[in-house]
Image (cartoon, rainbow, N blue to C red):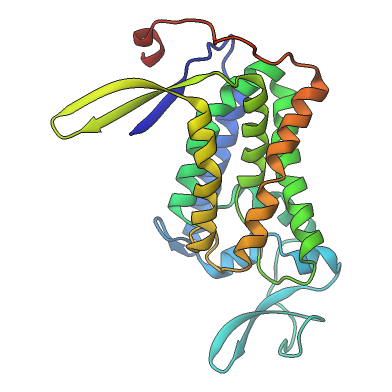
Length: 267
């Protein structure tokens, strides 16, 4: 089963969604170019440099790097541990990681699933709220999720990666705008293929356990870390998206989406 698109007609090209997808893909390719693999994702060093480390954000001026404890490589921060020796490796400014972390993913699967949901549901939200507001919603989702992660774990050395918080805000907005939407889905079985419509709510409900699986399996972050804390902060994006659309004053969709022939939607 592979979802293709929803059945909400668009009145304009979703330029912001397209730009975000392009930036995320380019960021992933650049990250693995500096170390790592296409499937496994960027190296631990790249994740450490460009991910957002809660300890660094909560303790301005302190930087983190890799240290060695009993022949094992671990993350150490200047004032947060006694195993840190010498100066840390040159790294981007801490404030820039707030933004780079939102576009960097820990593995190909984490990248694929986040982009799949962004491509499926982002265009309809962008079409409904406008390009500028959509971009603000997306960035706000990522920033609020990161802020909550820092608040609940200010001493954590594990870098945060991924666009899950931002995409959660988009999904929350979609939930309020189009609760009765359906998704055109390609179903493949042995010797047979067909296209069916499934409620968008089913896919939206699958997003949360999917993110939890990515976190617990280590696919969301090559360095690892407090998976449950990361997952919990991602949840804040959904109510943020709901609240944003409500504040904008967009009317909730009370009826089925505009009817369009299945063949036209799948084209």
